[in-house]
Image 1 (tube, helix red, strand yellow):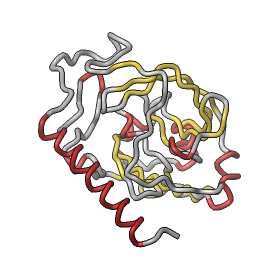
Image 2: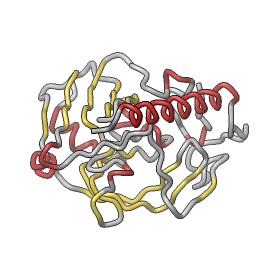
Image 3: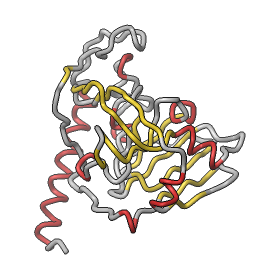
Length: 223
């Protein structure tokens, strides 16, 4: 268990990080003004390609053993589900290759993911007609929101593996969301709950100055 001083230090680091990123939003940091149509260039405007995978979080990296893993899928669905690890692995398993683009201006090409396609998860829980948005909740308290149409895209994954190995805790293991067509803050790490809703509910960064949609090719960094 962390000591009070350690918890205080983590809280101070988290608050400083949040304040800095809110300042970025107010200042429009990294905006180039050269936004264009999605997909005309592999590298979105204002981005640089990296070979490593930078680690970004809110100062906490939850440790979630597979035996304690639970994924809740609820809201505007016909068949709500609570999946343990075996239940997750019983769903259709897929692989995909995609690039990722972080709002802090780095991009990483050719990431190989293994996991469950969001489309296959949605097929299992059966969204109701009124469902239009998805709220993602993480085990560290983080939240983010996406339109259901974006979440249902063919390249969206609930990834448990990366480049042939189990997804590292630092990068959101045991399970994270991967939404390649949006900035990577939309790809929630340590995902524990997926809620479908008729109304949109902006998440952690969206309520702190970040764009509600987050399209990298349109430079939708901030709202």
